View 1 (cartoon, rainbow, N blue to C red):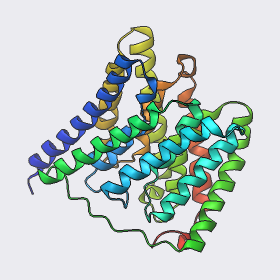
View 2: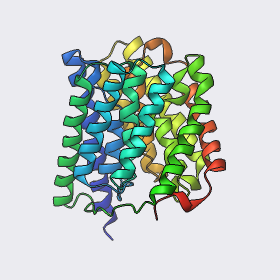
View 3: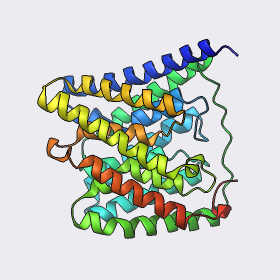
Length: 314
């Protein structure tokens, strides 16, 4: 085995991931359109580029259409559905589960893509347009990497869902999430349940997920990512007045180095890393604490309440 060659290839994939995040944030700064910053893009680069084996059963066409549908639905909910925030989020959660089941995939990052505009009260169509363009870039770059043997070829094997059991599963997920969300949403502390944490919760609810083997590690990784993202934004951008793109580059480098050391890639950690880049600076101090508390609670609940493999894809 050519270990040196594998390390070189992995470094290139990490480099592409950092460049993707930098380009996104730089373009947002240049244009003044904050909606262009899509934190889930870092999760997608980890899953579609960095990981040796893509963690989702999804092909390139589904990546594009599912991300697009989720982003558009989230913005339309904000624009045309005058319901309380918690109900808007639950509607987006239910919609995500429905299209995942219909498309026979476990591509859970779409949950964050759908819910994030609701959290940010985004009404601009710049957000879904940016998500569509970035999804195309992810797909095209993955294809280039596969053609040049920089990563294994992505082969799509549809998930075989039992429709009745999937309905039960998503109903249970939605009910449990809604009950957990009551207190933080009532207190206007919604980032205890930041969108990437909801993705984490959904992933851990699958008894066959490899992430369930190390729930404490997953909670720690999400907290570490939130801390690194908040620290880089606060220190380099707020205090030193450096460009946000530089903060993003430094945060991504630290996370990717950590992921390479522990050898377990968990895409939602990439998404929570970039959340601080779009938060109000007054929220940065408490964001890592909120993520820690939310991650611990959601990990525990997922491990305790979702033990049966019957409601999950083969």
